Amino acid sequence: MNETTQQPPLYRWLLFLLPSAVGVLFFLTPLVVDGQVTIGMAWFGDLFIKNFQPQLVQLAGLFIVSSVLLTLLFAISSGAKKKLSYLSDHLTLHPFWFTMRLFGAIAATSYILQIGPEFLTGVATSGTTLGNLIPITMTYLGIGAIFLPLLVDFGLMEFIGVMMSRIFDRVFGLPGRSAIDAMASWMGSGPVGVFITSQQFERGFYTAREAAVICTNFSVVSVSFSLVVIEYIGLGHLFVHYYFSIIVIGFIAALVTPRLPPLKHIPDNFIDGTAADDSRSVKRGVRLFPIAINQALERASNAPSPVELLQRIGRNVSEIWLSLIPVVMGLGTTALILAEYTPVFEWLGTPIAPILNLFQLDEAQTAAPLMLVGFTDMYLPALVGVNISSELTRFVVATVSVTQLIYMSEVGALIIKSKIPLGFFDIAQIFLLRTLISLPIAVLIGHLFL
Image 1 (tube, one colour):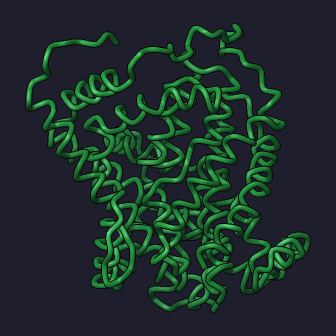
Image 2 (tube, helix red, strand yellow):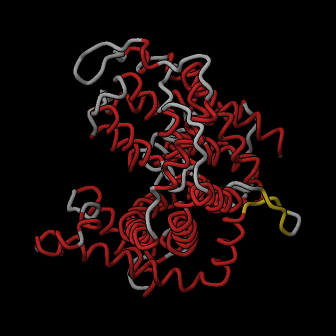
Image 3 (cartoon, rainbow, N blue to C red):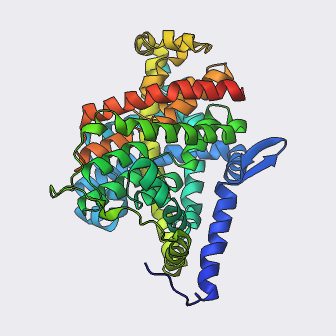
């Protein structure tokens, strides 16, 4: 884009600056409330949960059961599926996801009505997921979906993406546009970043290597999701330290992981087989700031109308509450049943506990399996680890669970289903590499802060 001397109209500046400033203040600006460092979103979410937790539990049960009924409706009625396509795309009869939603509905109903066996009605299982985790998840992700447009629809993402493009090119060897993918993940969610990257790969903007590296290293966890994890595990007062740790570890892992197998061996070819060249590198001497401003103002001038925003927010919130929450209920309750009534977690932790003992972490035997269960879903380590008494150990569990990035319930499944050349064993290998990189750094930072 060429620089221009024509002054943009004032309304375009206001459309860019005002929503972006409010979004930054709400999501990203540290606040001190009652002597604790937090952010506006966390303060508002805590206030809401404190006043409406019983109602949130009942509402969650209703949405979880409704998701199963809607899934069956879409399976038998093409008319309903077409009318509610924004929901039916996520509520399918896929064997695994439907099973998780169905089990989540059974567990939620059993807990609310207190009917059924102890492993479904108990406080340690369904009571933990539905009574504690789900209200936090519903609230923070719901708030994130409502206010996220302030960050992504009025030019801020384009501005930061362009300003970071040269860093991505020089430091990570990735095209500048990959900064936009990282921003989309950070301000939205990891699956959003994976979706954008896979689309860009299929359209010929990324090579196979670039797409694989971006998906597994820059599909980072959103601010709202990170807040869910740290709040649930009981360390909300350390959110700023926690997110600082995530950024540091993510940066180091993004430098190291692409230089190791399997990412190292993925060909640097486009989807049509042609090899990459240097034509996409950021040109030296070009000023990024005017380009960033122009793209931000252009995005702001094409921002969605209030009606479009409300429709999009409605779709995003309904997707979270009807698609994600039931899966979290099913997966989370299953994990807690296994942890409470079977020795599976003890078996998983046997080879890892000595490593955690070496790092002088208390309750290493309890924390050890949590280093691996995050491969299934990123919620699970926090869900099981909340009962660990040591703040340091809980901090390490929460940090590693988020910096691992790869979890099969969303990000991993999306990558495998895409055309990016990464299979299940590649994904598992990258998960283990990121775990090995994240763990010692998380321990070091934890010892500094706690």
